[in-house]
Length: 262
Image (tube, rainbow, N blue to C red; front, side):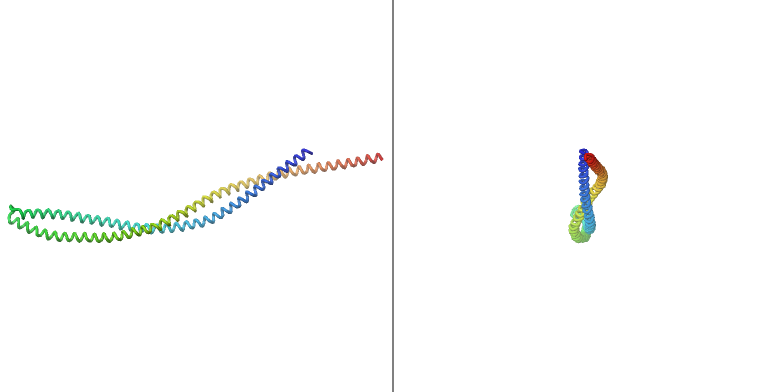
């Protein structure tokens, strides 16, 4: 009897443990369901964030295109200025060279004219050549001056255009940087959401596997304890039936004894 009672108590303790395991499984399933809902919500948010990033990226690309075109225009004009400046320097060098040659010729001719040892014919020829040289030089100087002035006017015009183009590029740079920062921020949000989504999916997969394992463990323990409980109950019922049978036999024997005494 004491052994049977101890076994019944042990079975009750094991059944309580099985019920606790079932509660843990139900709680884990509720948590798993909540995480699945969270994952679904993140999926929807991610779609919105990805769409926002694509829009920001398109706007950033468009702004970059405007900036690149403005910058290219400014650089072309600045290269044109450099080319004009090189031509101006070339003309100035040519002028300096011609002026040096002219000065040397004038000095030489004047030397002949002013030299007392020079013949009248030599002096006359030198004086005539000097006069012609001065006239030619004046025309050449005017021509070079006009060329220089034309280049300077072109330089001033291209410089204004280049400055305007550079200012346009600088104005285009600000919205481009703004759009670029917004696109980068949108991408950062997308990457964070994706990382969170992947972490959550890994957690859900692990908890799903754990839930399957726990349910299997619960089913096996429940089946085992149910079988054991059935055996204990059957043993208790059999013992009770044997006891009742013995009581009846005793009562019957007692009745027979009393009948003999009468």
